[in-house]
Structures are given as structure tokens and as C-alpha cells.
Amino acid sequence: MVKHRKSHNARGFKDDPILKRYWIIKRRLKNNPYYNDVKMCKEWEEDFTSFRKWAIENGYSPELTIDRIDNSKGYSPENCRWVTYKKQANNRRSNVCVQYDGKTLTLSELADYVGLPRNTVKQRYENGWNLDDIAKTEYRARKKWSEKQNEAEIA
Image (cartoon, rainbow, N blue to C red; front, side, top):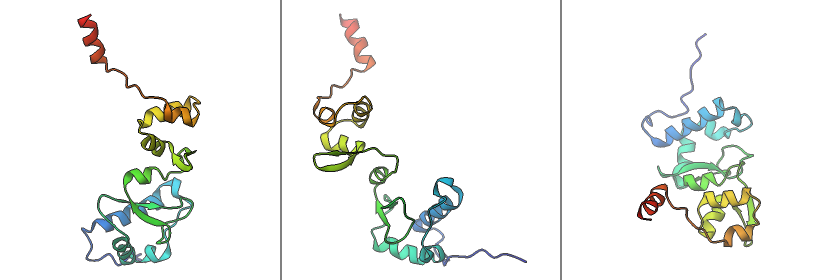
């Protein structure tokens, strides 16, 4: 018996960038063990045009990526949005979140909020600094090795 592959109503969309995103999600759900408990809603699973319509109506743009609002839930119209890669990176389970100035922020968001390099905030946090000290201690950029060499040659 020959098993036929479902077309998912994708005919005519061969070069559509939304179709590429659709297949990336489906491949991720099938092949990545991290996504074992994550599902795609039946509506999208069975009908690419439904996913495509949702994508267009909800702000799809080539420079954006699909993001699950609640990472414990699957891919569905209620739980997905189009966001920048930076915004998506702040919506990971592995992020450290802190309360600062009445807001819940990831360390990366805290760095942007207080105007410090992300690595500086991360290092200070990992070294046990309290949040006020992390945010309010002046940042002094280290001199590059070449600048140190120039000063040594002048002296």
C-alpha cells in the first residue's frame, strides 16, 4: 500500500517565506526532543493556508520570527505572535528574571533599561551583586590591549 503525503493545502506557495517558517516549525516539533510536549493546533497542522492567513493578519514580516507567548503551550493563534529576534530571546525558559524598579526583566532587558553592557550585568549578577549596585555602579570600559601597548611605548 502506497502512503500519500498530505499537501497541507500548500500548493501554489512553493516560494512563500511563510511556508518556509511553517515547515521549520513542523520539522522542529518532529525532530527536536526539546519539543516533545509541544504541539501545533489541529487547524494549522492540517491546513497551511489557515496558518498563512493568521500570519498575515497578525503582522508577519520577514525580519520577525514566530514566538510562543507561553512556552508551556503549543503553536496556536492564541499563543503565538510575530516578534523581533531580540524579543524572542527574552522569552526563553532559561532566562534569569529579576524584579527591578517595579518591573520583571530578564538580565538582558535590565542591561538595556539601565544602559549597561549585557555581559557586565550578567557578570555582576553571577558574582552576587544586589540589583541596585548592578544598575547604579558606573561602568568603566577596559582598555583594549592595543591601547595599553601604545601607552607602554609612550612611557
